[in-house]
Length: 113
Image 1 (tube, rainbow, N blue to C red):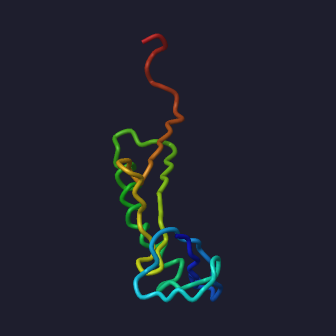
Image 2 (cartoon, rainbow, N blue to C red):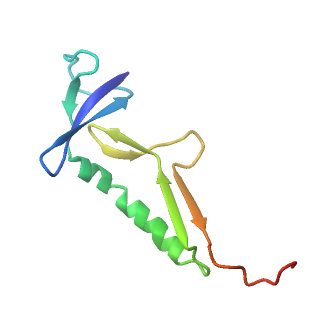
Image 3 (cartoon, rainbow, N blue to C red):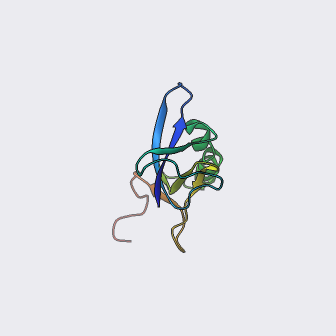
């Protein structure tokens, strides 16, 4: 089931997030489909802040490589939840974090080797 959750923002504004799944426990079905049925317990920024330690750990590990890449791209699968905030989403048996690395330096190997 899809429902809308209102996330307050640190600026005082709010955003609506459509969430799919079971409604959090204790909610009363009083809203019509497409209407807000609850307000999140934390700000949108606080919810997203939960991924910062994960992102920092990935960056630190990649920077520690003996030949670090010139470019790193980290992609997170996230779910927003009214009660828990941000959850790293599972994708079946696949990882919920995708890391791409690019080296732009010319190869130090001679051509043809």
